[in-house]
Image (cartoon, rainbow, N blue to C red):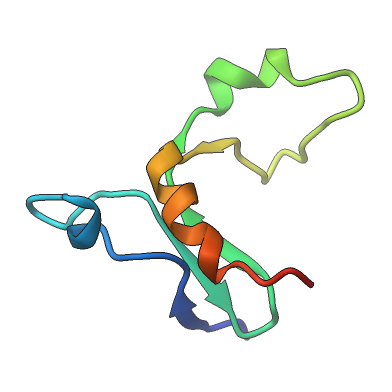
Length: 79
């Protein structure tokens, strides 16, 4: 079973969230994959996917802020 092993980037509080709740976040999992907390934008973006992109019924298009990804960049491995 997968487990969260570390946060990627800084916490929501460090990015300026006053409550630290309900904010985008990124985590590395024990199997090497990543989990992302973001806003479900599947309904709004699904029709705009490029012709060579698709998603399974169980997959969602998730949006995170630019700041969240930029703050996480230093923690994302190159390989």
